[in-house]
Image (cartoon, rainbow, N blue to C red; front, side, top):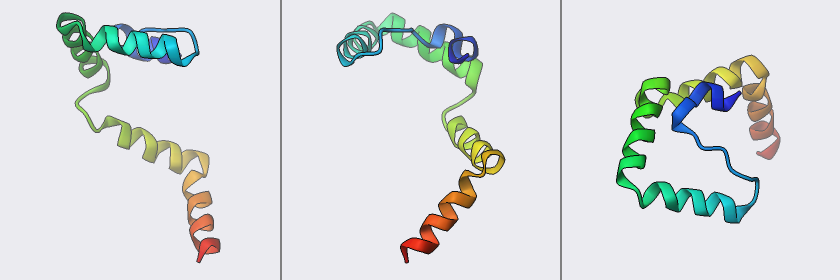
Length: 76
């Protein structure tokens, strides 16, 4: 689902640290690829900061904010 959302702004890798690190270095060391993926991400997701809106939406609609408030109250 995430690949569908992000399109060319995401590369799928095996779920291990070595594969993730290799892919991250590949992107960071290739200015053309980095620029391409960055532009694709902005085109699909908007400017940086969009993740805050996603987190707020998820918190409201999944009850996470209520859990956080309860945890904060119990912590005191």
